[in-house]
Image (cartoon, rainbow over all chains, first blue to last red; front, side, top):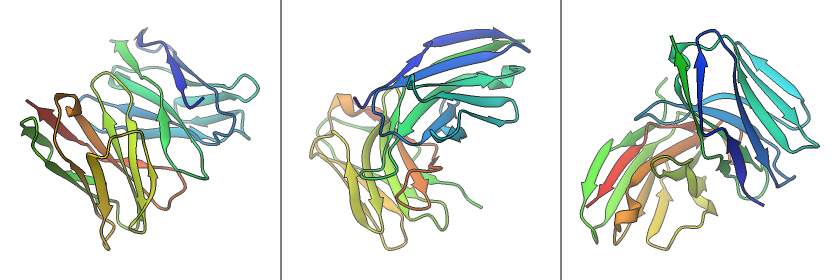
Length: 113
Length: 113
């Protein structure tokens, strides 16, 4: 019940295209859902995050769509650029009790020039 | 402002040895968490400390321990190293113990030989 399932494992997109990464969770108590971007040899960097009382959040080219009833959320990267090539992790957490992120398994995105 | 700083960046140890990893959180942040990231996987929660007290512990053996100092910096200690402990160890800093906007350091790459 603590798992976060992420798909696809890898993704190749043409420059200017839309990259879509999906995540599903089981624990309905999760109440904070961040996305992280990680480049090789670096730590994860917070991209954007959403709470379940909001169905969509947009920051620049990055949008989170959240479907509470389906227990799914997704990251959309509009106008994908080669510099977006990285591994993306979704995560879920509780903001009460033991505070920890449960991470998905990651999606390796490659944007072709 | 300095971000989360971790030291050392790389470390090679022999099986059975002990290792200490260090983390300095973002100035003003009082919560530090530790994660283990095995190659190709998402980070796994090890510990959270807030105000020098352990607030959460993940599913890791007692060989793993940590502490937080009065200046909010933290150490992660691992005893009796095993080959399987080889991973990127990440420190995450957040303002308080509620998991909103956790910022990760670049990690310490530990190799056990």
